Length: 92
Image 1 (cartoon, rainbow, N blue to C red):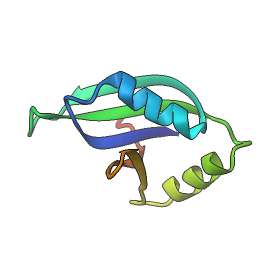
Image 2 (image 1 turned 60 degrees about the horizontal axis):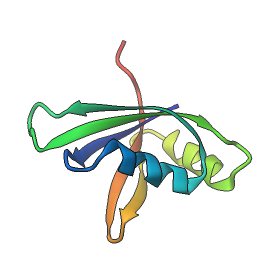
Image 3 (image 1 turned 30 degrees about the vertical axis):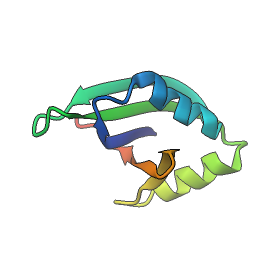
């Protein structure tokens, strides 16, 4: 499953995103892809490719929530700021 954060400030670094996901201890981050938003150059869309660690309870819970259509997971990265994380469905 790929994860998507549809709107992130362009000022947030890839390192910050990586560290936020590492703190969750939900698996191995394979790749982080950043794409600028066409409609707003101050923001970007982030795709995270992850190999889940299914021995972790949080990883199992996130996968269960994200497997539901249109559901998201709120990831607090800097209290009170958070990202809405969705399952990514790549267009082919």
